[in-house]
Length: 261
Image (tube, rainbow, N blue to C red; front, side, top):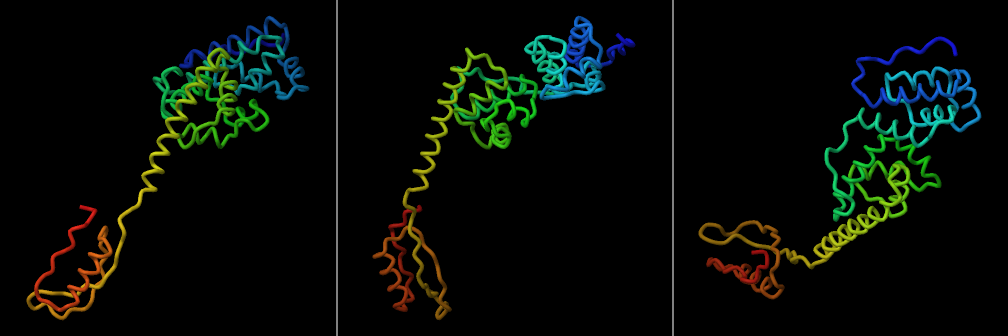
C-alpha cells in the first residue's frame, strides 16, 4: 500500500472539503489500490490524471477540479453521483453565493429567474463555464451566453435552460417548474419590450425652425437668430413669423397651441 498519507489539515475552515478528502481516501482504501494504480486506470479515460494530481485531490488543502474527482472515484469503482455531491458541497462552501433565491413556482420576472439560476449555479459548485459547455455538448450551452446571463445581460432560451438544469444536476421532477418560470419571465420581458417599443413609436412634437428678429425698445435692428420651437401647428407658426417680420415694436403674442406645456 506504500507509505501512509499525510493527515488532513486541522486548520482547514472548509469542512465540506475535509469531508470530500475523507470520502476519497476511504474509497481508495476500500479498493485496495495505490495511487500509481489509480493513475494507471485513468490514462485511457477522457481525463487522465497523474499520481500527484490524485494525491492533491485527497489532500484537503484546496478544492480539486470536478473531472479529477470523477476520475478518482471512477478508478476506485465508487459512485460518481456521490463524488459530485461531495464536490458541489465543498465548492459551494469555498465561495459565497446568494443568500436567498425565489422558488421556481414564485418566479414571474427575468430578474427573479436570474437570481434563482445564480443560486442553482452556486449550489452546483460554481462549475467552470467551459466545463458546463463540455457537459452540455452539441453547443447547447455556450460559455458567452451563460456568462451574460449570470451578469443579468440576457436570458437563456428554452433549450439552453434545459441544458443548464441538466448540467447543474437539478432533479428532473423540478424541470417543469423551471420551464414554467422561464415562460412567465419571458412573457414579462416581452410585454415590457412591447410597451417600450410602443412608447418609442409615438409621434413626437414637430421641430419648426424660423427666423426671429429682436423687438422692443432699443432692440431694433438685431441680427436674425434661429430658434426651434416644438409643437407649434404650421399655420400658427407662419402667422407668428409674419408678425415678427412686419417690424412692429409691439410684442406679438406667442401661439397658444404648444403641446409641450
